[in-house]
Length: 439
Image 1: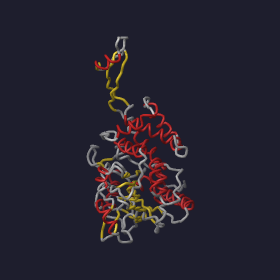
Image 2: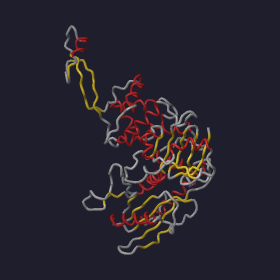
Image 3: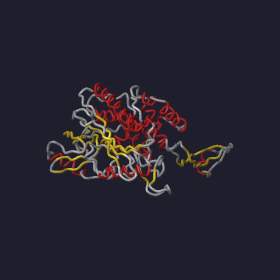
Image 4: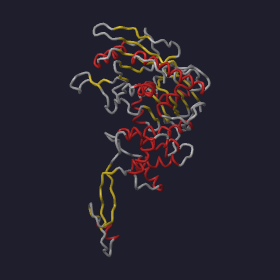
């Protein structure tokens, strides 16, 4: 087993060995969209690739250039044929401890009980799948209860379907008032929901992890809802339910349930994201940096009153044209008189990309906002720059950085992150709300 540690958007420091190149080459240059279709043991966040009309799905997991591993905007951990690859955030200084990545994961997924003090290895990542479950369950339930047609074999006096002659003769001779029949019903008590119920019961059985199902009222209500609609649950049917879901078809509306179903299968089958040296498939869990950064900022900005449009569901979506059908646009955060765009890249006033600047200006024009701000992480230049006044209809452009602390101790890092969040909040308030309050 060999290990490779590299930062996102960079080249590995050392040349790959011949064995590593042989193992990694089949997956080099393959897009996340393609991997998401064909590799069920690689979990990719966000799982709705391309739903925002962005280019997340088109980027490659990695490439091989000049004998080195070349990464894009993806972070996480995966294994291929005995080669373990850990991709850290380039805003983390310590290559052994991915504190910035871990901190964002805790905030986005609401994980407050995992200790990321140590390197996130294969066993920790499998545990992480369990702690991701509540987040995915809540997202799925926002689309409603998953319903599907289910066939029931009944034997009573209230006939509601086609009579099963053979079964009737077998069960009801001599005749005592009952009739055997088959009934087809559109029900929430179906294999997918049963799979979710079995996952809930599996998690509840572990004393240490059971707390995630009662961490707040929203997840408590979600669990209660699943239990209520799966009245036919039987603990002895777990293997049967798993088998029924192995070839489950994707639903055009209940898109969130597809990922949730795959996650439940991974948990119930005790699949590890680690892999043996004889496995030539890819396993792991990876996160698009731009998505994770935006979702982390949402945990800070939504409590301030900023709107965070849900582009995958269409909630809060905006359009370029007044027919509200043509030219959808996807601003990250919308304030009373401002529009904020999250960028997972190092920025300053002199190196803002042309497309980023023009995108922000178009948002300002269509939404009739006077202020456009790019939000980005940084390790060095922490100065706010709101000083670019526009010609024409006017308005101002600028950048507000989030200063990522660099500390080798996890507890100190968390404290410094809280300080950085306070400073970030104060800067946002000063320029968008006219206030200077701290969290």
